[in-house]
Structures are given as structure tokens and as C-alpha cells.
Length: 536
Image (cartoon, rainbow, N blue to C red; front, side, top):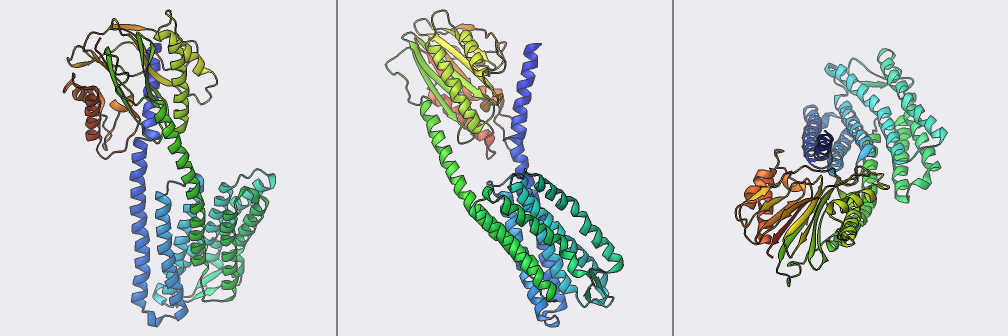
């Protein structure tokens, strides 16, 4: 029962990882991004086309020149906004709630540009006065929504722990209800604006108060940024200052001069500058991170044995192994080394998770296994080695990572092999050049799952020409674009096309079979294979 419970746990963890960290979820997110991009593109292009059609139907010569100027720069702002939106979707440097509120802000700004452009096109059309009113109503909603999203974007960028900052957040959040309610009230009394039945927009007596919430939020953002300026770099302060000052000046100007509408276009321009400034800096940071990852990848490659043949003067065995990480660095590893003149140890393992944390845990696990194996006396076997390593890995394992591992020790003079498996994939064995067969035995839990476990040791006698193939789950769980797994059967088919062939050819053949099956689908997991042939 305990063994069954552990298998369920490992299976669920792998499925969770495939679905939610790198594998199928990554495919799902990619498809979702494509759908979002397509739908948003259709909507935005339709909005731009509608504005252009309105200009054509009304006739540019029939419009006041300043109205044409307003519509022109707002169309340009919508096009810039759409391109910026696409950049946000595909930009791997940005993620999380900060990106979410930036996209919200971007979308609100684009709708504000569209409704403002349409308001000038609809101006003076008596038959469309109701549509003109609805358009201006939506435009008036965009102002406070834009200010709210900007505050959330800034507050996510900063770490706001001061009591007054939490109060300000509540003021902005709950205060949003006030301008929204006032705009609904405007429908009945026209205090901010109205559209007369002959199609003319007219400001109300309290129009200047319609931007009060926006101005208050801008002041709150300015105060917060000044207080928390040490959290921001110079380029971030410049980007925020641009966004604060330009719209503020535009609001003051357009409140005094009717007919000129540059607020939303300036906001879009500021967002473009803000994105570019932040992106350049983040690009430098990403370049530095990529350089560190490349160095970590090189270090990982150097610690794994990659010179073949290994000990060419020894005629009792042949060995070959490869590891292909799914990321720059991986959590899989293999190793082989002489314990003494008559014993060789063979190790393969797979750390839960991927990336840098798994790679660091992998290096610790590899070092512990090798040290325990090389210091093993005659009374120590692979099960004893795993027992010791398991207890050491459990100490301080706050990230709760674990390692599936397989360790075999071969006596070269006799071919007798003792081995132990800690939750790892079942090995495949070819006897004297015959077909590979999976050796299924009761498994033990992975290393680092529970302190005090006693790992068992199995035995098998290898004869001349016997070939052992061990691998990580990245082989069997390689997945094509349709979500189908490569599986053990396909692996055995590739192995058994010529079981007695050169070990490198066996490795290459399995890898080619996986690549052909997977096609253009991304690699979900590290793929590691080790092949050992006894020739003593």
C-alpha cells in the first residue's frame, strides 16, 4: 500500500509538472496567446477601420481641421497601442501582475483613443446623436479606469509596506466607485457633458470636476514614488515622471481649450516610452542572467563525464551516455567511475523540477552519491549507499526537491552486478545481443522524500555481450504536439532494431526516434540515457 501511494504521488507530480510548468501548459499558453493576439488584432483593426470609414463617409472637407488632426493622431496612437500590446504578449522578460496591469492600462488607453476619435467623427450628425452620447459616455469612463490601472501598475512595481500607503491604495481602489457613479448620474443631469439632439457635444457646468479623480490619483502616485524613490532606478523614475507630467499638462490644457484633444495620444506615447525605457534595462539584466546561465550550463557539462571511450585500456566493458537538458541547465545527471580496480559504479538520476534549483540540487546529489560509493567498504552495497545519501539530502531540504536515482556496481572480473533503484525508471537489459527487455521490480521511493528509509539491493549476473540501458523519464515522456507520450514501447522498438550495435549508435538511434516522434513540439523534460555493455 505504501508503495502504491508513493507511485501515485510521483505520477501526480510529474503530470503536474508537465501540465503546469513547462510541458502542456506551455503549449496551452502559446495557443492562448495566439488566440488573444488574433482576437485583439481583429478588434483593434476593426476599430481603426471604423474610424477610417467614418472619416471617408463624413468627408474630411466637411470636418473642422482641428477635428481631423485629433482623429489622425488618435488613429496613429491606436496603431502604436496594438503593436505595443503584441510586444507585451510575446515578451518573455515581463510576467506577473505588473504586466497584467500594464496591459489593462494599455487596453483602456486604446479604447479611449477610439472613442475620442469617434466622438469627433460623430460630431454634428443629428441622426447619430444617441450613438455620439454613448461614445462620449464610454470615453468618460476610460479616464478614471486608466488612472486606476496606472496606480496598480506602480504599486505592483513597488513594495508598499507603510501604513499610509495601504490607506492610499484603499482610497484609489474604493474611490474608483465615485467617478463611475457620477458618470451614471451625468446621464440624468448632464453635469459633465451632454449631446444635444442636433448632434453637438456640449460640456456641462461641472465638467472640470470630471477629471478630479484622475488628478488625485496622479498626485498620489507622485507622492508614493517620491517616498519610495530608493526602490526605483533612475530610468524608472524618468518613465514614471513622463507619464505623470504629460497627461497632467494635457488635462489642464484641454480643460481650457475646447476642440483640442491630445490627452490620450500623449498617454499612449508615454506608455511607449515607458515600455522602451524599462525594456532596455530589463534587456541588459536578462543578458547578464543569460550569461550566468550559460556559465552554469558549461560547469554542468564539465562535471559529467563526456570523453568516450572511457578507460579504453579496459576490455571488460564499454559505456556511453548523453544528457540533453530541457533548459539551459538541467536536473538530470549520469555518472560512472571506478571504485577500485575491479568495480565500476554506474549512476543515473533525475531531480524533480527544472532550471537552476534542480541543477544545484543535482550537483549536491551527484557529489554525495559518488563520495559514498567511492568510500564504500566491502559491507556497503548500492542500497546502503542510497540510505546514507537519502538521509543527507533530507537535511535542510526546504524546497522539498527529490531525486529518482539508479545505482549499479559491477564486479568486472565476474560480471556480477548489485544495484538499487530509488523511484527511477525500470532499466532495459539485452542478454547477449538479444532484444532489450524491461526489468520490472518493486521500486523504492525517491531520495530526499523521507529520512530513515532503508533501500534494497538487487542482483544480476551479466555475461559477455549483455547490454544495460538506463534512462530518465524524459525519454518515455517525450510528448508530441498532440500531447501523446513517446512511451516505453517506442523506446524498445528503437533499441531492438539492432541491440548488438555500437553503444553510440544505440543512443543516437533512440534520440533520432524521439526527435521524429516529437517533431516541432518543445522538449518538456531533460533527456538522459546511459548504455553499458559487459564484455569481460
